[in-house]
Amino acid sequence: MDGNRRWARQRHLPALAGHRAGVETIRRTLRAARERGVEYLTLYSFSTENWSRDPDEVRGLMALLEETIMSETETLVRDDVRLEVIGRLRELSPGLQRAIAGAVAATAPCTRGVMTLAFNYGGRAEIVDAVRRIVGDGLAADAVDEAAIASRLYAPHHPDPDLLIRTGGELRVSNFLLWEVAYAEMWATRVLWPDFEVKDLDEALRSYASRERRFGR
Image 1 (spheres, helix red, strand yellow):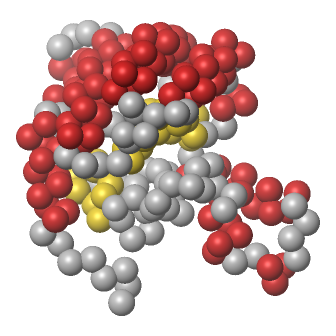
Image 2 (image 1 turned 60 degrees about the vertical axis):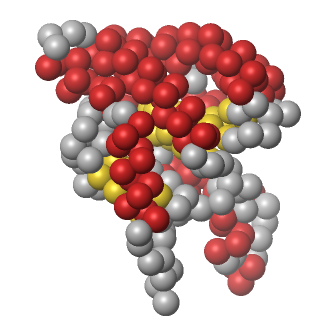
C-alpha cells in the first residue's frame, strides 16, 4: 500500500495523516474485493524494515493499527470477514499483541472472506523463520522440499496469491510474500494508496482476467 507519506506531503500534512487516509482505502477496497468474489486479500501494512523510519511515525503507526483493529473488529464480524495477521508479532508491544489476538479470535468463525495484514513482516524473514522451524523439527536434509518449507510459512493454509498490486508507481516486490508470489501476476499503478479507488481495483482485475497464466510451462 505505497504512497501514504507522499500523499500527506503533497497536502502539507504529517505522515500519520496519510496513513489514516490509507485506512479508509482499506475499508473500501476490502468491501469491493469481497463483492467481486475475491476470497483472500493480503495487505502489506508494516515491514521489518519500517522500524528505521522516524520514531514518531513508527509509534503513530503502532497506535493506529491498535486503534483500527479495535474499532473495525465489529464491522469485520458483521461482514463475516476473518482477520489474520502475519509477521513477527512477538516483537510488537504486549498491548498490540493482545488487540491482534482478540480481533483474530473474534473473527475466526467468519466465512465470507479473509483479510490478512502483513505487519512487522518481511518475505526473507518469513523464509528464515520457516527454516528455523525445519531445524527445530529435526527434519533430515533429504526430507526438506518445497512442501516442507511451504507448510512452515506464516499462513500455510492460504493459497498462493494470483495477483500482486503495487500502488504509488513502485515496480518491485519489496520483500513481500517472496515465496508465495513466485507465479503471481503483477499490476502496477502510479495512483497513491489513499487515492486508490474501486475503479482502480476493477482495472487491475480486468488486466488479470485478460492474461494467460502458464506457471512456467
